[in-house]
Image (cartoon, rainbow, N blue to C red; front, side, top):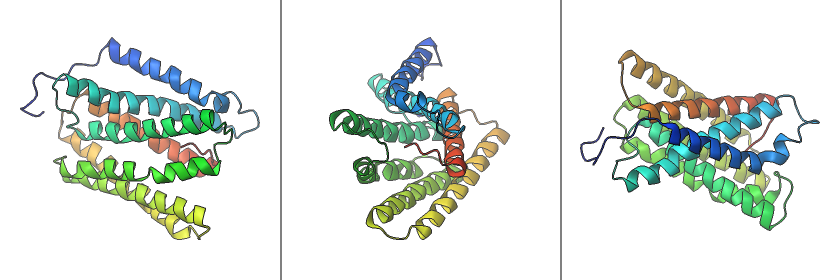
Length: 232
């Protein structure tokens, strides 16, 4: 923990759980027409949607919201790899949800696959690329640096894939890059977590929430890849 903090980070308390429940309620409202209309979809669609909901609420609550709350109190945040994960995932999710809500409710779009949505998300791609790249200069452990580098590369490849798709270009090379980046990021993540566990490294509860959020994200990506349940 940094020496320039004015006070120690608070422990996990009931207020954090209440915020998480509140965020789940809001996200359920945003996703309700997918969650409640899965009768004709794959049986794996609903688990993927619920996994997305839980992961988003954890990332938004533990990322941008906690960032504002702790900086307001003079506490340095983020400092641990898991906290950087929450900030990157949460900020990206929050921006996407805001764009999604504007396009759906203001422009009265009803189909998530609408081209306007994907064009808007592609234009925001610089956000996750930067948010995953910046921690490389702040985390101390080399394996975590590689993890963030691979994640940043993953979003670069994802952006290239979307641009190629919109432009009508073959996406095979982008697909391969995404697969490679995903595999390398997961390997680096597992290695880093196991290495910290073997060293009995104590990084705090927020770091643990970040690890859990990324694990749910990995589960969601696998479900999407296998069963075609596409969500953000």
